[in-house]
Structure formats: structure tokens, C-alpha cells
Amino acid sequence: MKPKTKKKKTKGYNRVVLKLSGEALQGSQQYGIDPQIVDSIADQIKEVSLLGIQLAIVIGGGNIFRGVKAASKGMDRSTADYMGMLATVINSMALQDALEKHDVDSRVLSAIEMKELAEPYIRRRAMRHLEKGRVVIFAGGTGNPYFTTDTTAALRASEIGSEIILKATKVDGVYTDDPVVNKKAKKYDSLSYMEVLNQGLKVMDATAISLCMDNQIPIIVFDLNKKGNIKKAILGTKIGTKVDSK
Image 1 (cartoon, one colour):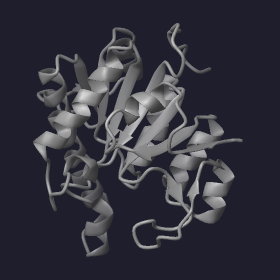
Image 2 (cartoon, rainbow, N blue to C red):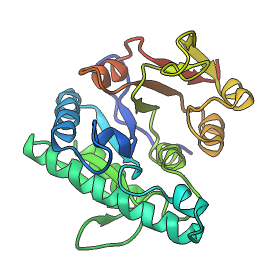
Image 3 (spheres, helix red, strand yellow):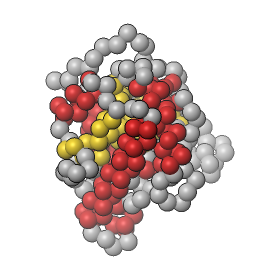
Image 4 (cartoon, helix red, strand yellow):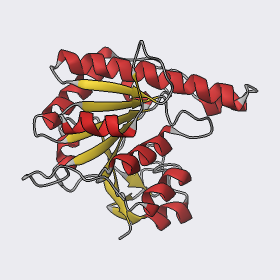
């Protein structure tokens, strides 16, 4: 049985999981974290938190370390993935720091226990934080190798009863091809889960899409670089590409 979410009198969604890539935090840099970019994201999140939205965030670690890439060059896959999980903790702490500077109450919950840095991930604890108006940042992936942070977002969304996953990217939706390389690529306004799987579209990995399909959690892919887009997506404004059961 899915956990109940607190009802609000506003349009849009009440409980949301926002998926950020690690690359979103690096801005135009080749590596690491751009404090100005993180501050800008925190400012958008504050705007949403003031509406009373229950917001949970999952951040990747690709701006610091990418496990799959390291494994392809000979590193043990499990070791590489655990290193990638640690990178997500660094990013989560950076975002929490920025949120606190914007007076947004937040908590980092890690799937890998590290008491000095973050609270351990406990499903009911995460839900209580959300109900108290705190932004929850899920760090450490699922705590297991071989699973991406996309799958983490789908898993956590299922566990906490999120109504939708917002996947923030560098483009304004899902296209038939890479719009940067192919100028003739066409944007999809909407897709079904099966269309994403059958066409091999790079929305989220297949495990994440299947998990969303099984639990009927829609996904909206949108451009993070346009300020205000997080709020627009949460309030139900038509934006980006929506993936659901159609």
C-alpha cells in the first residue's frame, strides 16, 4: 500500500522527487562543483518550498566520479560504483549548504551510513521530514552497486509515495536524436513508458523506467537552466516531455 501524502489546496503536485544529474552542478566547468550554479538551483528550490510542496531530491555524482566509466577501464565494477555513491554524498552536502544559506530547512539521508555527515536512510524518517516541510536529499544511491541514481530516484519515489519524478536536464525535453548534434531532431511532448523502452530513448535507464511503469509514477523531463522551470513543472504547467502510461 502506498503511503498517503498530505493534501494541499494548490494545483499541481504535492509530493515530488527531483532528479538532478551531477553534471548539472558543474555548470560550464569540466569537473567539480560550481557554487554559483548550486546557489541558483537552491534559489529555485526555495521558491518551491515556500509553496508548501513536499520535495525530495536525488543527485548523481558524474561531475566527480562515474563508476561505469571507471569500470570500463578495468576497475572493479562494485568498487567503482561505491566510489560513485560517495560522489553523490559530496554533491548532496554542497546542495544542503546552499539551501541553508537560502534559509531552506533540509536533511541529507544517505543509503551508506556515515553518521558524522548525514542521517541514515529510513523510509519513515524521510516521510516525517517531508511532512514537516523539510527538503530531503537522498544520497549514496540505493546503497548497492550496479544501480544508477535514476533507479534510486524511481525507487525512492515509489517508497515515499511521490506523485511524479522531475528529471532536470540540459535540454528542454526528450528528442528523437541528440538535438545538439542533429538540428532536425524532433521533440516529444509526451511518451508512454513502453515507447521509451522499445525505442531505447535516453530518458532514464530501463530499470528506472520499469519501476516507474510498475508503480504508475509519471516522469517530466525538462530544462533546468531556465530559471523557474522547477516551479512550473510542479504546478502542472505544460513543460518539457511527459512520460506516463498514456
